Length: 261
Image 1 (spheres, one colour):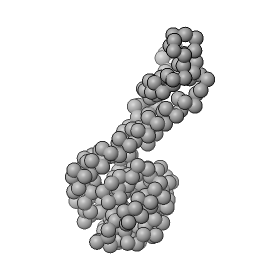
Image 2 (cartoon, helix red, strand yellow; image 1 turned 180 degrees about the vertical axis):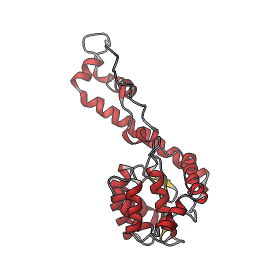
Image 3 (cartoon, rainbow, N blue to C red; image 1 turned 30 degrees about the vertical axis):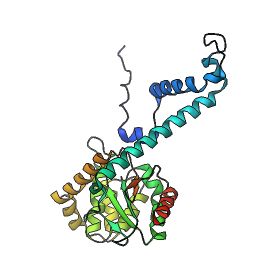
């Protein structure tokens, strides 16, 4: 009888970690440690007696969930603070690049920058409301950073989608193509080409731009900026140089209004 056991799963990527939080033994160990301190006032003075932290946890499992949630919130706050420190130290990382799609007044008091991937589930989930936020704030400048990070192995769909959208931007068709790519559930090279054609993009001209060294440099520069900022996932929004802790467009809208004031 041969050993047909399945190979161990691959470790989660930084993007997966950043969007789903810690899980498994490591998170449990940290949570238990935090819980042990937090629950101490509720246990008997004799920690080795019958009424132990273990029994308390069994009787009050909700405390473990609260401790884990508090730990994740603290980690997220630390991550955002680190990103904001990097942005403040080097403002050029978020400077509007002439190659980036940008909409709204060039002298706007508020600028919103989004780093995103067209295959990112979170990016797709908020895209419609984010576009509505743009329509509701014509006095704000919105900048799109096409940051393809979800490709694995020979799969280059995210890279191709980013390049295709930027090629459409060169023909003045960016937002229409952006909307269509975000609405497409199963992106593929064929689907992306179909979307380009359906939105009036000259496909041969776009193909030349997609394969150009200039496009490669543009995408590479976005990757470099994201790495220097310490970004770990998409979408990430910046409002006047400060990262939003969440991805909800309503939260982004509140930060926009606060920046206007």
